[in-house]
Image (cartoon, rainbow, N blue to C red):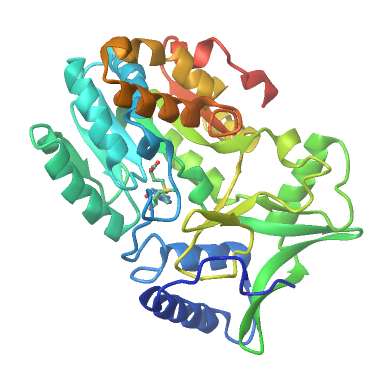
Length: 392
Ligand SMILES: C[S@@+](CC[C@H](N)C(=O)[O-])C[C@H]1O[C@@H](n2cnc3c(N)ncnc32)[C@H](O)[C@@H]1O
């Protein structure tokens, strides 16, 4: 159904191509004489220890990698976030911060540096990172970027039983493996990965009950049956992730940032090929079977599903805003005090970073922040003024 190579993509260097061949062999061994679900494929090519995109040595984030995230674009993202963390932690005793999936460690470094300036350092800064490779990179980076605060940072092998403070996850939900489905007139099919003359191809098989039920619930929410041939994604893993988050958040706020939309937008009639995106050296495309293990695979987030799962596990929905509103209402202006006195080159650099973070055609509209809370969290300016939680 889908070719394994995108002709327009850059050619990987010899080492990367050899690594991708090893990952493809691993995928072939998983498939055997049958097929694996798309979520199993995505999990294998992203997270297999020593092989997967996130679990092996390639540079992933930044200009020399495959994609760029808000904290990598500008420290202003972390600085505004620091103000929100300080507000939450001021109401709690011995509050800590827990970051899921810390990437290069850039966000943690800039956030802690700003919290030190605000005299609002957390008791501890905990990182829960599934990738051993990224964990090592984060340790090296943070030890050199913030040596005087480094002792407050720790890496967790398992989630804390009880957390009081702030939870942060930037572009983690979009990295959870998704199932892909095709609506057929009389049934729901699951897209799976199989072999055709040794090439990876997508095939359909009848959806297992858990996926068919999820699609039935989506159609119930929409109030209509999706059209024959409609292809989209469902992140079944999000429910468990939210259950873990709700289980540990004893008191405080969780801020989840990602590109995503509400359920009506996610399953809009004209969105009939889904929201899957692959990133290879800053080229964005939709062929997830290309370049196994050396490209990122992500899917936009259905924030209605995330909010519903959070609420089902007892969390309050504090707010749902665009990234632009989160930054503009959360103190971006205050973070730019003294802008006029900066050298012209720095002003130009900051202006272009702000545009990238806030303009609708860049990261401003597509990226959202969903704020969840437990206990008396109070109001966060970043989430309150343009809150569109009632659209979820
Ligand atoms: C797209 S990167 C984002 C990195 C970073 N947060 C940033 O904004 O630059 C996704 C990150 O989430 C991590 N990750 C994926 N699934 C995870 C999970 N279930 N728990 C914790 N981290 C996870 C990946 O290893 C990676 O560090």
